[in-house]
Image (cartoon, rainbow, N blue to C red; front, side, top):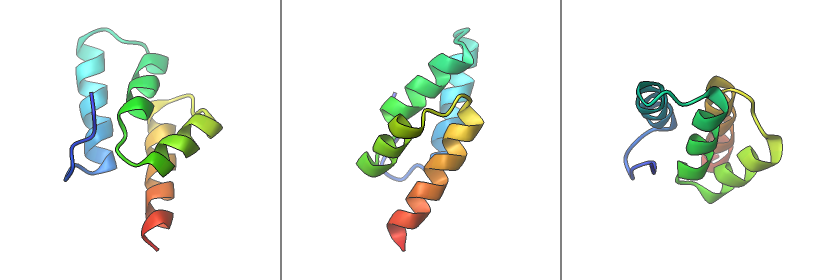
Length: 71
């Protein structure tokens, strides 16, 4: 699962959550899918370094890093 070009981080996190929960995936599996699928290399790198434990934390961190990228 990959983040689409015009898809926000929040939308991508929601998609990962919906599809993953329907498939019975654990929280750690959802986080891993989110990290692997996020479009920005910088966001991906930061998520790998910080190792968030929940999808909500991963999304919040990703949004913060993405916001810094655009400044």
